[in-house]
Image (cartoon, rainbow, N blue to C red; front, side, top):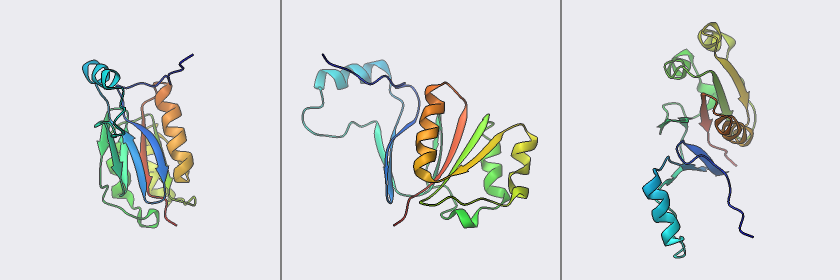
Length: 149
């Protein structure tokens, strides 16, 4: 019996993470899905809807902001949280790399005042949590820092 994973192809999801790289699955439409199924991806090529990122980024179900301007969670300032506030999610997840780091609570205050939850966790946990929330049709934004050795 063939078992196919059930995931929403119409939103950005995180397909894998490893030190210095994260693979993102970009939304695709039904004709692209049919094309992939017909091809059956037997040539070993990565589908064009995968993107490998190696710098900090922000992802929501409908938007990917590559090369986020901050490269280290220790350098987070209020301006970076304003970027997230502008997206108006119901929750923000910050994946802070291999280890968990917290930002100054004054920087996250505007998000909290707007009723937006903020959670800090290591990047592996943030990737899994983001995908879980997206699969539950939640409006979430994830700010992800790379896992470094």
